[in-house]
Amino acid sequence: MGKSTLTNALVGEDMSIITYKPQTTRHRILGIVTGDNFQMIFSDTPGFVHDPSYKMHEKMNRYVHTTFEDADIMLLVVDHEDRYQEDHILIRKLKSLACPIFIIINKIDLLQDAESLKQIESHYEKLLPSALIFTISALKGQNISQLYDKLLSSLPEGPAYFPADQLSDRTERFFVSEMIRENIFLLYHEEVPYSCEVVVESFKDEPDLVRIEAIIFVSRKTQQAILIGKGGRAIKQLGIDSRLKIEAFLEKKVFLQLRVKVREDWRNNDQLLQRLGYNQ
Ligand SMILES: Nc1nc2c(ncn2[C@@H]2O[C@H](COP(=O)(O)OP(=O)(O)OP(=O)(O)O)[C@@H](O)[C@H]2O)c(=O)[nH]1
Ligand SMILES: [Mg+2]
Figure 1: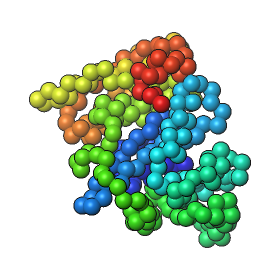
Figure 2 (figure 1 turned 45 degrees about the vertical axis):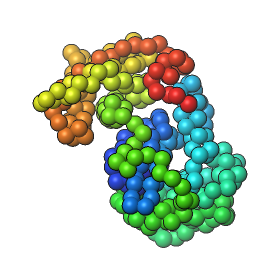
Figure 3 (figure 1 turned 90 degrees about the vertical axis):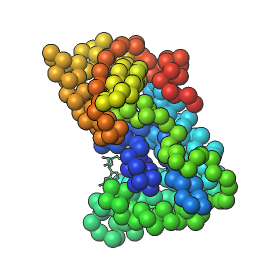
Figure 4 (figure 1 turned 30 degrees about the horizontal axis):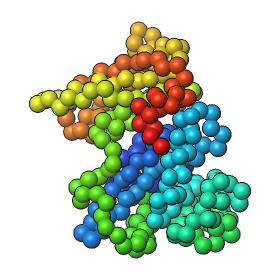
């Protein structure tokens, strides 16, 4: 855990949303860093879903697979509690790669003693002898600059893919919808956040404010009621929290309108998934 926290730390921007809940990231999001004589493109992906319950999970896994196909350097982010084994699909795939592999042992701020860190390191040294191992705290910024420097010096030479001022492959609308989704993850419980997807329907940049209309899709009528809450209290809170975040991001006043729509079982609907941006 910590892929998105690490990507944001390396890129130096809050690109990916972060929550304490698993499966927060659902798409592949590029963060672009351009220097005087280099361009590094960081690719944040969902975590691999082992037992996909929905077509959406399969699409999320496709994003992970795509990264294996086009990365110049692969980073496997593990935390102090993970112990990946030989038969893990990601380890098998890593073993078949020709590019450099970095194993990132994250959350070292939570480890008290040096001995347990040594044990984790030696586990991964045996598992992937050709990989470089880094011990970091993405949250506290420990060893991030060393990792950044090593990434930069390990990249192959090539042309820049993006204009120097471009920070991501994603639009402002996408980031806004993600900020709403982040707040859904933080405000609602159990299955509810997982059954929601957010689409920005309209985005009007007016002289003194940005007027945004977003739709939250849920997969059942009962979830719609939960999202709205008694007397509309829950969705009001969601609107306030999301607006504050979006205002900070756009650096402008925002008028945010949220609507909730039921799309039965959208997570298994190919056409809808496509419309919702699951394009892999
Ligand atoms: N203590 C500590 N917590 C961390 C660190 N890095 C990330 N976290 C926390 O771990 C949780 C998950 O972080 P994310 O960056 O969203 O993890 P992810 O791998 O992107 O997760 P998914 O997108 O759900 O696959 C959040 O609560 C983070 O604050 C770290 O170095 N130390
Ligand atoms: Mg993530």
